[in-house]
Length: 429
Image (cartoon, rainbow, N blue to C red):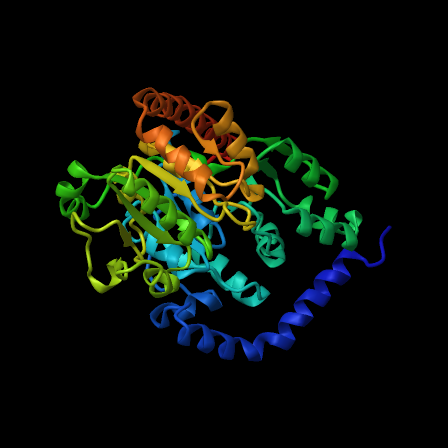
């Protein structure tokens, strides 16, 4: 049932932007103060470019994602686009400093912070960059990105598309007749699974194809050799276990588990990478003596059982060092973090029982025996699982074989999406 004309909703949306626009500088100043914006690039939020660039007749693909997770997916797709023959420029926009840092070493793409969704600022951005296509990654849906791009006849795609149950309920309250106006503007949607395909069709999308999460297909990133050298002596004498993207209450469980194992002479060094690095000082006090912290330029020695890595961009290096990776956000009901990245590093992977946010990829990895999912958050179950992996070379080989097959399948599916984009939208120069 339609309560509002869709165009009236858009007028109301633009009117809200008119009201809040005077407050945006205050918001950005606050974000600068708490370290969530870069002062040298603040103009990008208003649609201005911070770099001078000429397309010289080249095609330009614009990939947009919210934060680090989406930018991992966007980066994977950018690699796929190159592999299927795209030779033009690739622009990736995002909204967080962590995502910008992730892309700094990637010389194959241009990064900008996305303009806020004020129609004037979005048009300013589009007039400068003149993209040949917009690809929105995962759940990023900004009305003026869509409407302004469509007004300029720029094709729009959603890749690795997904909408949470809570967002889907909100959409249903707006009315599917109204969401149809927005989603029918999108030329093609690649979803992460069949359930997501059904959701987007209900919301009014016309062309929807079931694919996969693009995060899964990001190839391994070369490790930092300086860090590898610092661990040469330790890795030859200790089993390195990585706890990636841990959340509150999880570190204590992991620390207690490793203490038990080391009492049984397993010689483990646990590297903790907290999801929120500001928690590192709290985590360091969970053991006696306090755990060394990377941001303080402290590195472990042979006697240390624990170490906290709380600086950005080092997970690929730590994956390559580790025999086992525990994927955080899963021992308590945080929903779990995507475990697919670790799969590219031929390591044993464990995840807790709470994986609602990444259940499809976890199910796929479990089916291929590329991951072990715990039934509880008990120290005993985690301890026994670590023991089983560390004591059994057959299990380690099974992980490696499963990882090889899965990553090959994920890469093939990603390139299928990339090829579809390049061919159907005439993006070969």
